[in-house]
Every structure is written in C-alpha cells, then in structure tokens.
Length: 307
Image (cartoon, rainbow, N blue to C red; front, side, top):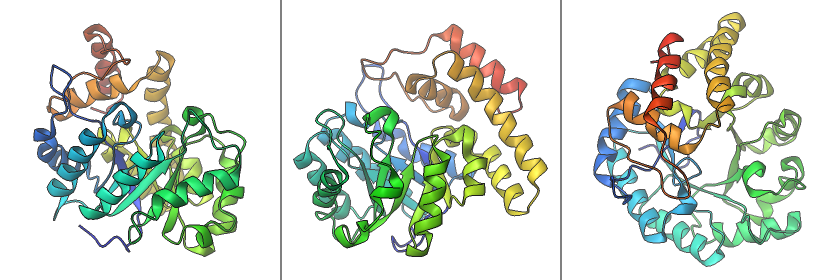
C-alpha cells in the first residue's frame, strides 16, 4: 500500500461487512472483495468499519479482526485502508485506534459519540484528540455525519479553526452531509492547510467536486465505482455535460432506492449480486432485504446500465 503520508484522492469504497448466514463476521471473503473492487470497479482505497460496515453494531474484537484482514488483503493491491475507530466509548475508540496503528493501517477516522453528545466544539475536539493521540503517527480524519450523530450545531467550518494545533495528525474530513455551503467554506478557508476533503453524499458528488472536494467516500462505489470514476474523469477533463449526465444517472438510481427506504441491508444485498460474493445478512436491528425488492433494484440498475 501507499505510504500514509500520501494524499488520499479519488474514490474510497465504504465497505460492507461480510457475514455468514448465522450473522457472524466472515473475513474469509475479503480477499475476493479486494480483487473485485480493484479489477471490476477500479476503486483503490477503502473505508472499513464505518456506517456501511455496521461498525457500531460490531464488537471490538470483530472490528479488530476485520481491520486486520482488510490491511492484510489490501497489501500490494490497494492504495489506502482507512479504519473507522469511532465509538460511544472513548476507551474503546482509543483501543481501536492503537490497534489500527499496530497493524499499519494507512489512516484512522472517527465520528462523534452520538448518545452522550459533546455539547460544544471544544468538547468534540477534546474527544477526538484523545482518540488520535493513541495512534500518534497515523493520519486522522474526522467523520462528519450529523444526520446519524445528531450533532447539528457544530459546523465543520468552525471545527477546523485551530484543530491542527490540538490534533497534530489531523488530515481532513469525511464530510457526509448535504450542506454544500459549509463544505465549500471548509475548502475555501482550510485547503491551504493541506487538509483533505472527502465528500460522502454520493448523489451530490459533482456539486462537491465543483466546491473543491479531493475525493469521495461512499457505499455506492462498491458497485458503481466504475461509473462514478467516469464522472470524475469527465469533470477533470472539463466535460461538464458528460459529468452531469452521469451524475443524473446515478441520482435516478438513488432516487428510486432512497424513495423506498434505502438501507445498509440493501447495499449488502446489491453487493452480493454485483460482486458474486456472499455478503450475508445485516445484523439486527436491520432487516434483511426481501428477494422481491432486491429483484426490483437489480432490474432498475440494469435498465440504467449500472449493472
């Protein structure tokens, strides 16, 4: 893999967690998963144990086992493995961060605790600092996802002010929010600090690219990464008409599934079909996608040329 000091760019697949029919994690298929991302989708970096991976529904032991297998299987193939270490428990997040450093993950990331929430910017930074310090030589990304954490009063534009002095390993933000003004101001004010801004709302990626996003982390890059890369290439070549056409296509698909209550379970089901790798069921409280609905999703993807 590339050195952790290399800048993270392009698409990053937010991985699902393969499970057996009995609901146990199934690391044995991760090698095939890596090859599929690389050879079929052209995606060269992964974000593991995050939201799409049901990270907060996994035990600490399971998260460590998965991180180890991803780093092992990605060696010499993928560019970067970013391990999400966020937790409701500071001690658990610190343990996971130290473990990620031990196994030589390329970077770590953490979202804010979402049950007992940090009441202020300073409280959030204090929490993140105590996590990052346990992996002192590993780049750290803040995972901003206010829709799930419920932390809506702390804008990223404000959080980034002075954050490098508090967290020396701070590298950037995984920005999973639709507020493009906040995102744009982050880029505008802090790009000179050499922070990396990764956008996390797949259906709005083109808008974020215009605002200056350096890359993107998302669940759909597991199975439509190749199509999304074509949009990135068109944007880089200043072929805005083609880039818009592809983004509209992706939006049409996502509008369909979001309109039916798109869940992580659906992503796992789609991946099982697209990759021909059994990803298994989701973990409770998520419910398994019905075969009838999955058939409709796959038909929609085929009709749009996405599968």
